[in-house]
Length: 359
Image (cartoon, rainbow, N blue to C red):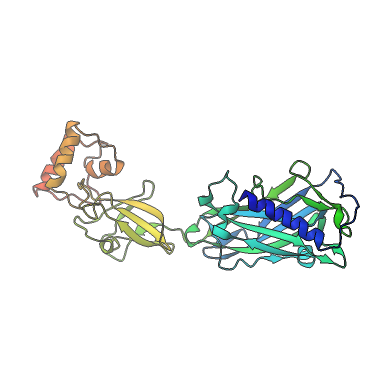
């Protein structure tokens, strides 16, 4: 990748120089010592619905003649994604005096600085190169700033309630630091660096709004379950549930999500994961509880007693909060002899544990 960056920079300089006219013996341009650029990223709105188009606008303010620029524009991949066509479009001076293109190869991961986790971000690399008209190199120079280009992102269906950032990483080594003193003379190109030409980047933030993805009681059936949102637990199911379909008789999903439960090795009992998924991606997960069921088969029976006896005797420490919640039938924070008494009564049929309120 390092080699490709150098090649791109060399080709740009060579192309601009050769496209003008034969190079004379005149000297290269001279920096003024005050060169600076500010690049501001904005969006057309501050809030968006899920799966909505987001127009990203990039404005450039500079006080020197810029014949080319290149910016990697990063975004939170948990909130935004690249649409099939990003609609990159040069604006103003950039539209009339140059050509623009983008690169999103591999989702833009190749252009993300090492300081960032590439799995958490997407990236669009945008490059503008001046054209030559009537023997003069096109350039951008506007201290007040002007809209340079626009493109589109798309909010994800799973991003409801999230705020995402769109920004240019200052750590990138992909920036061009090129200038031209006299646009009519190709030999007056000169080069700057991060110290001699400070670049300031302003980021944009936008929020995705809409119906929050949640698990809620299903009032369409007789006995809806109880959802503990704080601890992400759900209970109130009848013992012996056998499928994801039965789980959906007690609870339902909001925000366009679907319920896709992951059972334990023994069935849809305690420790089953009730997952809320959008577009195949889990965005929220809850632990299913069947009170008295320790082994995860959805039934409180003699198969659970060895676990309870082990916890009661102190042979095994119950360090799983989900198991502890399911087995603590007296609500005193531990599984002990008092809980063992309830287990024995339940397993011999003397009592039936109330799955809505077992205490």
